[in-house]
Length: 352
Image (cartoon, rainbow, N blue to C red; front, side, top):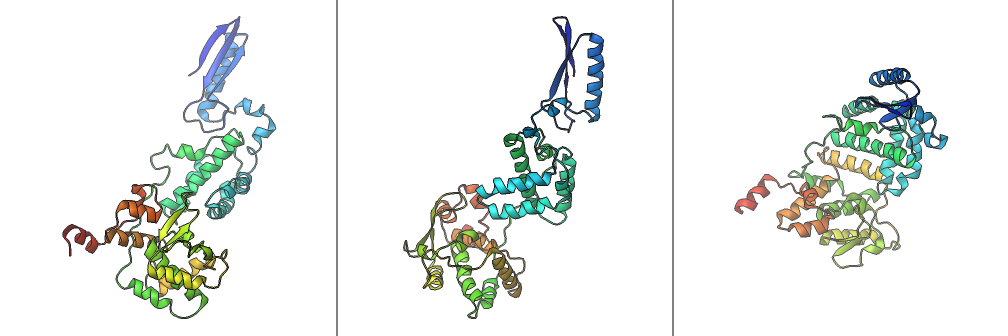
C-alpha cells in the first residue's frame, strides 16, 4: 500500500511492490516528492497500477553505474561462462561442474538476458529435465543455477532477483530427492563380474584391482582412482588418503586381497604415479561393458560403496568404525549406505 505525507510544504509518497512482482528492482519500495498533492496522487496511481500489472520499471536501476549493471542486459550465457572460469576451479567437484555449466550454456534460457529471465524459464527447464533425469539430478542442476545468481547478485552487484529462490517458495518448485538408493549385489553377480575380469589385458588388470578395492573398503571411486604408488606402503594394512571429499585426510583399512592387488599393480611405478591409468570416461565406459556382460546392467559403480559398508555392518562393525572407514561426517548420511538384505536383517535379530 502507498503512503503519503506532507513535509516542508511538499508531498512525499511511497509505493511498495506487491509480493507477486517478478521484475528487477533496487528495493521493494520507492518514494518521490511533489509540490502538489494532486501530482503526488497521479504518480502513486500510475506507479501502483504498473506494479500490479508487472510492467513497472525501477528508474533507479538506470541510474546505477554501468559496472553494476554489467551482466544485466547481456545473455545469461556470459554469466554462466564467467562463473565457470572464475568460481568453478576453486571447487572440489570442478570437473563435474565444468561439464554441467557447459550444458547450461547450450540451453534456451542461456540466450536470454538476465533482465528477461524469470522463474517461468527455469520451471520450463525443470519440467523438461525431469522427463529424462532423476529428481536428485534436476535438483542439483537448479542449485547450481541458484549459485550463479547468488554470485551475480552479491559479488557482481547485478540488480536481479534469484528465480530459483522464488521457485523454492512453490510447493513443488524444487524436486525433492526420492528414497535413497539401496542396490545390493544379488546372488551370483559378484562371481559373474569376476568372470569378466579374466585375461591379461591392461583394462582387466586395472579392474581386477579396482573391483575388490571398492567392494572390500567402501572407498569413494574418486579416492580409489587417485591413489599414488607411493601411498601403498606408508602404513601397514591401511592407505592414507591425504585429501577427501569432506576436506580431511583419513586412513582407509585395506583387506588382504585389496592390498595385494594394489601392490602388484603399482610394482615398478614411480612414487608419484597414479596406480590406475584410466580416465573417468574410460572407466565409466569399461564398467558399463563389464556390468552388462555380467548380467547386472543396472549396477552402478557407486553401489559397490553401499555393498562394502553394508557387509561391514553385517559383520558387526560399530558406527564409529564405519564412519572412520567411510569418511562420513554424520550418522544420518552413513545410514543411507547401510542397507541390510532380508537374510542379514533376520540374522541380526534372531541369529543364524
